Amino acid sequence: MANQTIDPSRVRFFNLIQATADKFEADLIASGRYKYIKTENNHKIYVEKETGRIVPILIPTLPLK
Image (cartoon, rainbow, N blue to C red):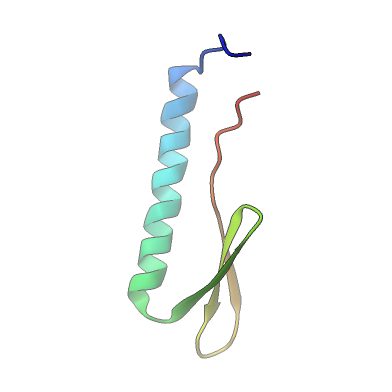
């Protein structure tokens, strides 16, 4: 398992997914309408300040299997 290499196209795809999630989260925070609550499993949990609506944001992880 230690000698296993990761396909570069898989890494590029993961980087794209990571960048998309980061951009969405940055936009969410910049709007000022949402407040960070906690991290649960592989999700960051935000809540809308006015309505209390919960918005989970997936934290992408690169599986090495």
